Image (cartoon, rainbow over all chains, first blue to last red; front, side, top):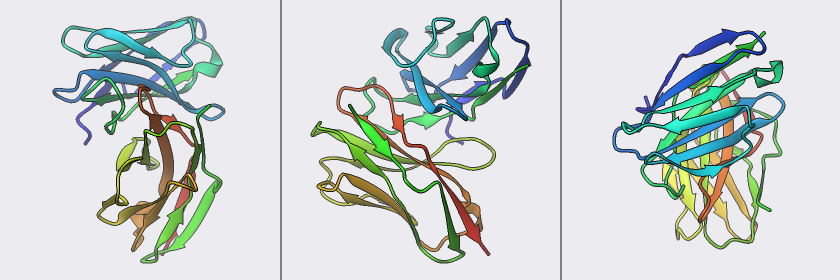
Length: 114
Length: 114
């Protein structure tokens, strides 16, 4: 158990809908990262928050957004969902803003868009 | 641009034997880090081992060791005394100083044969 929690574990929704994925980092970790794992794109970095502020952006679509709250949990919002958004979404946390240290991954949320 | 390559889509190993999973990277940055993660069929990403570019010795963690050859830009994972539970996808990941996210290779699927 990495100490990072993600809810829900599975999510099935229809095209055009909006969903919210939730992540709680390990106790004491200030940094949260979101990654998407799909069959065609592999594991891709989406976005990072550090202590409530956006720190870095990767290949995140404009339909997606995220935020980190004062209690350091983070939410990833996916809207106007398309079939291609079906993927495993991981949250990871690390103690510092820069990835000099290992990132601890949550169990993931498997999103299926039908 | 940074690039990380895993050339072995699949590997087989006999139980109790050692196996080497290949990973090469391409960067001009002098400071970077290399990680290996295991992803079993259940989907979670499990951190295995980390090697910093300035580390003098190869990293080891139990049955896992990293064969780090800086001049060749390779960071191969060696698993000794393979166990059936080692059957999984293995991802090599890279981060360079100042970056905030991991770049992942395409993974190698390891199957341990009884």
